[in-house]
Length: 73
Image (cartoon, rainbow, N blue to C red; front, side, top):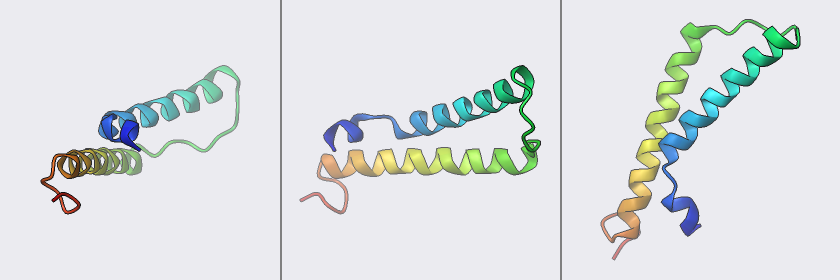
């Protein structure tokens, strides 16, 4: 669990989102898979929310490990 706390969760979530979009376009454009079109009007707010939650989660964990959060003394 200590290793997970040291990760930058926001960067991890953003990296996963970018990876998923890249895989989607690779499958559609290179291999000709018939996947539903990406609706960017729905994807970008979800990406922003996920990134914000990841950043908050990382900050919360850093505060709790330094004694400033709800689990600290």
